[in-house]
Length: 117
Image (cartoon, rainbow, N blue to C red):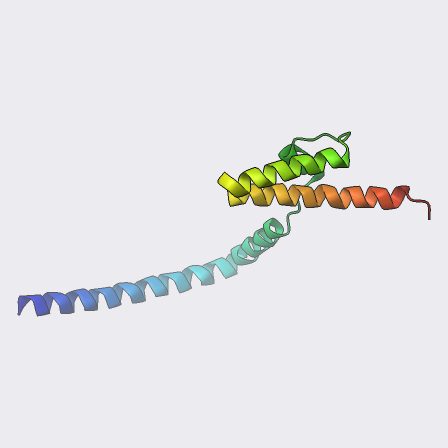
């Protein structure tokens, strides 16, 4: 009998607590929209999501300089990518790949600009 009463109290208390949390969350959203915090948070999220790797960051990741030939950049990329594929981190492997993509787009743009048209 006591277990049944205790179980009912826990269930009822949980329901009341859940309703209070939902109500507090709704109130927080309403306050945020009044203050413009919601829009600012969304703008910051979009800015972070669209952040593109810079050339400097890409060169640091691959350990190359502006004067490094493309073939050397590809050797560094292949080495770092394979090492992280075997026993490294997927995050680092992803960063290495994004760095190569960044430098590759710059390399292609430079080649197209140097080609007589």
